[in-house]
Amino acid sequence: GHMFGYATNETEELMPLTHVLATKLAQKLSELRNNGTLNWLRPDAKTQVTVEYSKEGTGKLTPVRVHTVVISTQHAEDVTNETIRAELMDKVIKAVIPAKYIDANTVYHLNPSGRFVIG
Image (tube, rainbow, N blue to C red; front, side, top):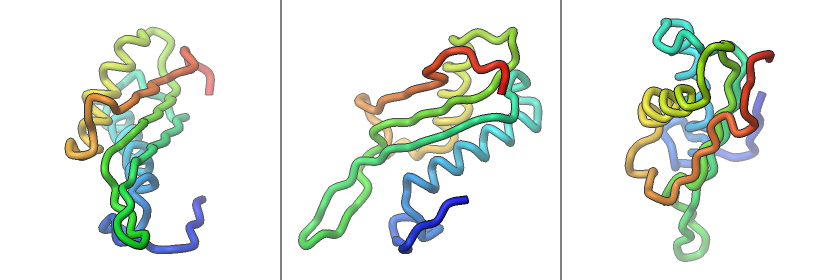
C-alpha cells in the first residue's frame, strides 16, 4: 500500500500525479495481460513516474511534464526486448500518460535490467 500525508488538487483523484500515473500504468499492464492484447505479459511488474513541477509564487507546484517513466514487467521467454519496449510504449504509456506531459526529453526505462522471465 501507499500512504500520503496530504491531498492535492493536481489530479481528479486528489493524489499526486506521479502516484496516479504509476498506478494507471500498472492497471493498464494488468488489463492488457488479462484481455490477451499483450499475451507475453506476466503478472509481476513495477512502475514509476517522475514528474517535473514549476513553482509559482509562494510555493504552488504545478505539474509541467513527465521527466521519466520506468516500467519493469515479467514476460514470456519467447518475446524480444524490442517487442517489449515497442508495445509498452504504444499500448501502455501512450494510452495512459496524457500527451501534454510527454516531450522529446522524456526518459523511458523499459525493462532496464533486461530479461525478466522469472518473477
